[in-house]
Image 1 (spheres, each protein chain N blue to C red):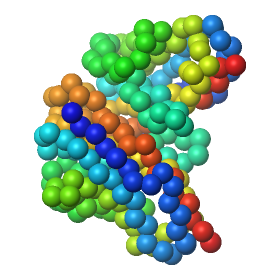
Image 2 (cartoon, chains in turn yellow, cyan):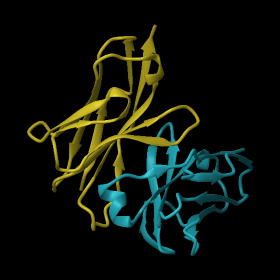
Image 3 (tube, rainbow over the protein chains, first blue to last red):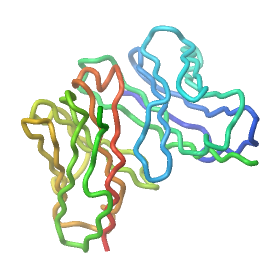
Image 4 (tube, rainbow over the protein chains, first blue to last red):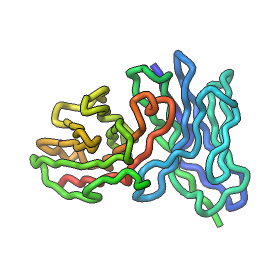
Length: 115
Length: 116
């Protein structure tokens, strides 16, 4: 069975600083990994996804994540934070298509940006 | 192309009542999934429908049910509402059940249900 852990329910960074949101996963088979962002009173929007191609994945809004199998991690980074990045971020894991398993979401990390 | 729409956006009910939420997926998407989001439990999978058939079901009591119509629109129903059912209910669509796992889901804005 797969699982995902997001370290830190709340992260605060200064505008212009590096953003690092941590995600570790557990999966008995090669996983598919996702990062979603949720702005207040909105649904989730896909930032990026890893589907066994390149280990460094680039997403929208300047975000990227690196799949590290040895560390079972898929941390989300952005070199320079912007005020508009303030939101909640969810990491999610799923298994290969055709499986009856469901996508498992992490508990979320709320990102705050200090001016 | 229009996104996933959910109606109503906000709903207030009292304990014991029942409620029906609606979701219209992106045109051409045949898979619809429902999630419950609460501050304490996070995002929890309710069920998934594909071609009018329930494909997967999460760990929720039988008070939670759903269905999908031939045009892929989906409804979920909660009967005998409890205070703990207060949550944001999110609907997500994808091209197929396969894509839901390997590709991406497109989420609607959610219906915020408050049970008094």
